[in-house]
Length: 488
Ligand SMILES: [Zn+2]
Image (cartoon, rainbow, N blue to C red; front, side):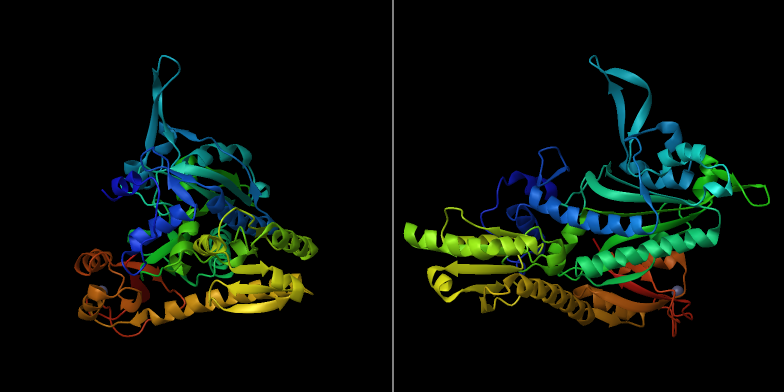
């Protein structure tokens, strides 16, 4: 229903106020700021250049991290034979409802002998193929990653958060020992935390998923969870330890140092274009986006202000004096010469969330300065053009830090300690955020609290913390400390 509604609108005239309707605000901003759009193919989105550039910044940062620790990229087929997919029972059971199948091909649309699945994730095609490349412990570890898109036949869709095709990276690693694979999954979680916090300026809770939320076929799943401005949690990246489950299903073994055959230990992990949605929902406001400088396609926009051709020529000459210096300093900037009124340009770039705007008029040219406007505080500051690039670089760092601190404060203000089932139910009746509680670990209770508290789930188990007190569901002694939230 929601999707039909969204897809009917060809373009957004006005952005709905965040406080009026968060969901509507989100879709309006994503479309009007030209991040993404519906394609006309049901549930499938187009990521537009401005949104894709943010994803590219994320991919570059993460790709650097994994290359640094010895991972290599490669590419596997889009289509997976049915027999491969069916081998890991738990995995296929988890994904079956979302798999799309190719059943016909060729000019006369002949039925295929065996249907091929469009990958919902690639464990089941990598498993049977990678065993060719692993014979001995000397071939391990195999640290691999691929950048691709996957298809999951979702019935509800939302730009970036839930669409039938999305873009991501999927890491797959194979190890000679459990300890090494467990460490790998943990290390990647650290990278994800860094992407969320250092790049997207979104503070996260990092920890282990509950059994009900564990990836199908995994021994354990680690996650980073951010808090959006509507106080719902968003899973921003997951890292899975498989033990020998996938190796057993696909017979991926190696001869160990004692010259015995042993099954590999494996991991997989992914972050996706959903992260672009995360930065929208974690930082935006009624005027639109606020993009963290580190992933901003445009960090600084220059708006020339003039009345006539003479004024325009003067402003143009002035900008030409210092703009090349910004480029040399690696500051992603754009001079907006479009034939629009300055006020419209301001609104345009505010909507797009550009961190810093420089207003430049003839009088500024005479004074050798620009007027810097901060998207976060809306403060206007005159800045001399001498040393402008260095100043802007500092300002952008500072902006990134302030944006993160604001999000940390928001997370702190929306984090609670709850003790009893009644408290949990009462809390989530009219509030969101993260609620830390004790939990005895009984799986049935997880389903019960979800039902009774309106879709609340265990987002993270904090294995570092010593649980104290009682389980917030049954009142028995708590064995685990967990964060509850309503989530996307
Ligand atoms: Zn309990």
